[in-house]
Length: 167
Image (cartoon, rainbow, N blue to C red; front, side):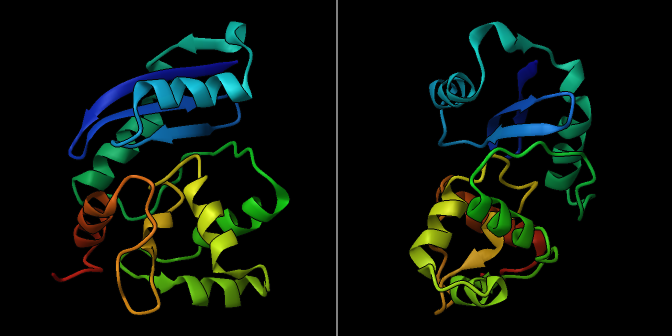
């Protein structure tokens, strides 16, 4: 079963879905309800999807505390679905500390991969639980805010919130 709901946050309406194992999808603004439901449909059968806010209470609480500057590290469980390469990238993203950034080049080096920045960028773009798995902390080699599925403005907001960006 997958339990989904939505809530209003400082960055706008966020959709959240979780299984009994943990949070499996977070859709931040720029992703529509239609995008969220398509992801659910692509990964679960319709009879497995249930509206249930209480099953997502912990994730919603942690996201709200994060947006209020009162949470630096998420502790809610996640239930990730992706390719082995994506899983490696996402696991490495969790090692980027709150308030810091690394470049796509540095991330590739950490992963010891020759697959290139584009492959890493695609893995980031397909991160099903952005913010909880902090793909927003990856920036261009020149320090530019590139490659964030929720948009550069949201990435900028998140990095400023964490104190990683002083613009």
